[in-house]
Length: 145
Image (cartoon, rainbow, N blue to C red):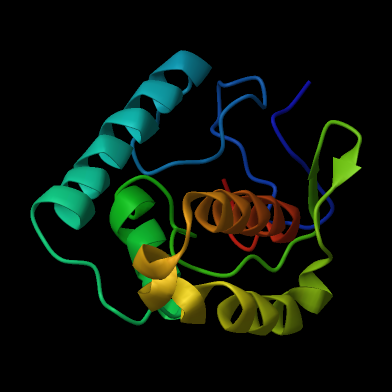
């Protein structure tokens, strides 16, 4: 079974991967190899964002797209772009691509624009904020992968 079920032509898998690995610039065909590459690159973007630099005081969704592009841009053509395909994983469908613009705007207002006050929240408020924003982001699933 494939990692994602997609109903458009964006569903391109790496030749020779038995539809287990999305088409990528590195011609990786093994799922464990692509997972390792993505994980290694994720550690690098974490290092850059959280150790080597200062996060902006105000976040926008463009920051999220920029980080996604920095993370996966050397691996996938679609990195850092809002998805235009309707996707799901298993039997669960993520938000319809036709609704993404509005959902992203709502996410920005509800979560990203509150980023600058996180250090003023109580522990309980912070945990609730993190949990709610994480769930909302996953349900929207605005980018591939």
